[in-house]
Structures are given as structure tokens and as C-alpha cells.
Image (cartoon, rainbow, N blue to C red):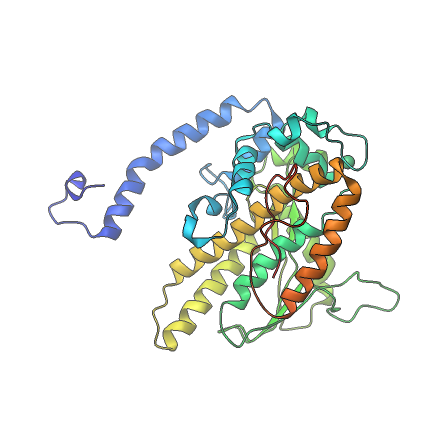
Length: 356
Ligand SMILES: [Zn+2]
């Protein structure tokens, strides 16, 4: 926006100019979103998906669309996006069919649903609700993004994850009270930080009726379920965050709180070390990181369904090879992006971001 367009007597700074542009286009965006929402109102699954990835609706909770579009703002040289995953993600975002589902007969592992007869949203809806589809990988992809932002708040952060029991499981319970991430040494946070991420889908039948009426219903319902499950077992003084997010981008309220808390802590820590630290910029970067993780969880589910349908044995072999590779790299503490595993070219919907 040119400075003159503001009509102000004083020349606006860059920051003021950005806000002016935001104010000018905001009503147009809101009107376009409302018009679009009205047009798809009759398709409740599409509408629930729209609500989950939309932040512009009046009366929306603070987590509305929080992680929906951050992946769209990545620049090529950040090297965090595979173009195949990007194409899949855009098709899912727009509710379009996916070519990999259209041109081959793709059945879910359960055998009951022909995914090739559905849109990408309907396919995701089934996969994310189907008992035969393993949801551990998308969960881990998203959990890894949360771990990454916690780890980058400061150099003294120690994170324990996955296998540990937290708190010690009651007698007879097996893995019931396992906490995904427990962090100590986060700058500015004296307590232990316990986070148990989960991904929920507002378009599945069990929540759809409420999800179209209440923005963020699925995320906040998952948040409440985690709190009910864990609250009586959390040691006094520890901080517990459920970390629930909807598959299409809305975060539960407490996940927004966590991202803001971590961003402010990291910014304050870098300022006290004599560096520049702007909390808003750090929060934006964390939000983007989580958005990319959620996007890879989404596209990875579709790709896995296609690969397993086309060649179940090859998919299993590849998974085993990938797991052992990831294990080695994770334990050397390295971070990387997996481009393509053996045989993943055929029918692949996108490369997965391997936790590491
Ligand atoms: Zn199925």
C-alpha cells in the first residue's frame, strides 16, 4: 500500500502501512468468506472443514483457523515443503478431488470404502475415523512439530517423550497415562511442561452435527477429554497442555495459549542474552511450524492410504525401512526432511516430513 493512499498528513511507517492495508481489505475478506460459507452451507462436511480452516467468522473462538494457513506463507528457500505435499494440501483445502484417488481403484485397508469414489475431504474423513487406519504417524508428525517449538525456546530445554510413563501409571494400567512430551528447562517457565497432542477431525459423523454449529467444537471437545483423563494425575505445580488441533487447522484454546507462552518466553530469553527478540515474530514462526506439521499429517494420511491400497506388502516394507532410518537419525539429534523412500514414487501423494 503506497503511503499516499492512507491520506494521512504524516508519512506512515512500514508497520502502520501494513495495518492500514489490513483494515481496508478486512471487510472485503469477511464479506467474501460469509458469501462462500452461505454457498456451501448445504454440504455439512464441506462446511465443517471450512469452519475449521477459517479464522474470519464472527464469534469464532481464539483457536479458529490458528494452524490452517501458516504453511501457505513458507518461502521456497525455507525448504520445508515438498511440492507434491503442497499440491495435495491445496486440493484438500479447496475440497477438490485428488487425481491419485480418481484414476486408480483405492480401497481403504478396512475394505469397506472405495476412496477413489470420494473427494479428498471425504477420503480423509473416512481414513481419520477408520479403525483399520493407523493414526500414529500423523499424530507423531504433529507432536514432532510441537516438540520442535518447545526445543527451540532455549538451549537448556530437555524433552522426554513417548515411551515414558507420566506420571507413573497406576497398577494394572498399560500405557493409559503416557504423556507424549514432558519438557524441563523452558526459559521463563519454572514448572515441568507436559503436552499431549492430538488430532481430531470435525467432519467425522460423531462430531459433525455439532461442528457445523459451533466453530472449534471438535478441537475443544478433544481438549476437554484430555483434561478429564489427565487432570487428576498431573503432579501439583506442573503445567499440562492438551495440544488438540482439528485436521484442517483450528486449535483448542489451550494450544493457542501454549504457543503464545512459548513465544514470549523464547523472546524474553533471547533479549536477556543481548539478542533481538520480538515475541510476535517468534509466535508467528511457531504457529507456522505447527501449521506445516499439521499439513504433513493431513497429506501423509492420504498418501499412506493410496500406497497401502496399491501394494500393501511394499508399503509395510517401506515403513519398516523408514522407521529404522528415522530412529537412527533422531538419536543423533539431527533434523531433516525425508524426500522419498524406496518405492514411494508410484502413487505418492506427497513426501512425508519425517520426525527427526
Ligand atoms: Zn476404512
